Length: 268
Image (cartoon, rainbow, N blue to C red; front, side):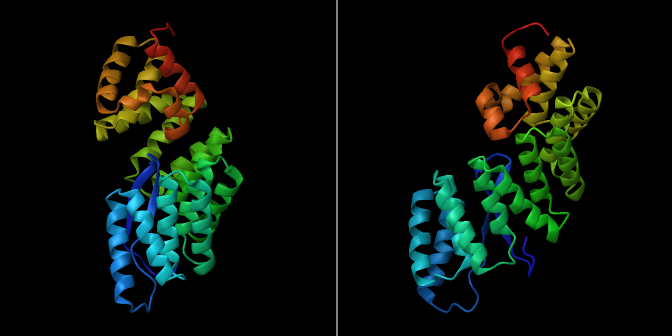
């Protein structure tokens, strides 16, 4: 997403399952230095391959040659975030924004870094900046929904997840998060309907099967809950981890509580 001209982008899931960071693949206009061009291309390839330490070194070298390249600062910020340098990531995304104030990608990337520090207000401000210019930006809608959920406002989170799924009909995780928000709001019939529809469309999606396992357990349908859980656990073992569900996947509290009780063989 670029509000000035289209950029070919590559989403790299190197930090959080639901918050893809965006590598910008177009270097600064007018740069004729062959060494710089080669470094940019190499840094991009190494970044996409997940060679994070090497990628950081290459972006550092490139920025010495092109210190006004907004894309490079944003890309380096993504690498810093993946390496755990969250403050450094925010600083790089901010520098990218200062150089090119009309590019939305650094706002999205900075919001992700701010979320990692639980800076909900700052993250929301970055996503709202994007949505004021493009109200149908699905990633910003979805990420803002995660922020509102983290703030405990699950009704607004549900609405934002729904908007994200309408803006991008193929955004299955947005629909799954909407279903989880409905579950948290005790709209279990609607949540179950949404989860079952997603499972029909995406039978290999662990998230929906794990969520439906928890919901069915809460409704005393233990046999079917076990069946869906067997599929979910086979697809992604992380759904056994309560901390991962809360911090990384960002499930609401009630579905997590129910899933943990189901796994502990408690009675609903």
